[in-house]
Length: 169
Image 1: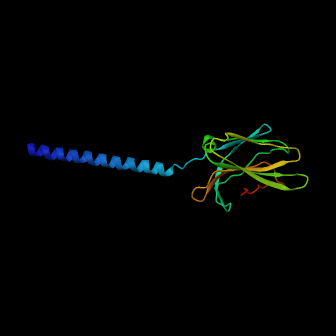
Image 2 (image 1 turned 120 degrees about the vertical axis):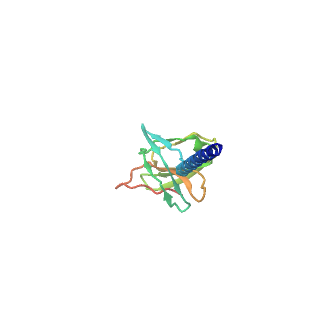
Image 3 (image 1 turned 90 degrees about the vertical axis):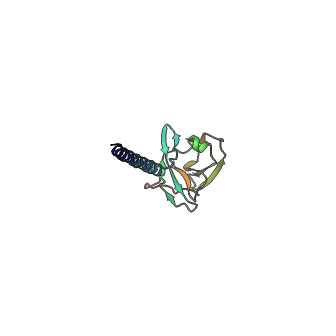
């Protein structure tokens, strides 16, 4: 009878061990799947001008301006009005660049400019407006990692016939 009890106990222990191994493997598989599915989410930027607000989502661009997932957000900024950008911690605590395109509605000339920021320099930025100047676009970019740079693009002037301005380099 002792021999039967030992065989039975061995079978029960083997069954419990098998269940534990299957459960552990299943849990490891679920964790691996969830980690693989979680992409690093980049924050959004809030843009404001003349009582209108827009949320600017990021995309990625390479040095030749081939972009993935970049959505150019439109927010009309009237001639002479400023644009205010509110930056999340992830951008404010990084090196980043603000690119702008400003046009002269009378002459049709377009000026491009940029400013580089260091970590902690600014949590908000105002692109000033001036009479006779029309802000066309504003782009914020972080340094490239693996050939692609996170980019937030904002078009601030409606184009005749629709469409959007391509990102400035």
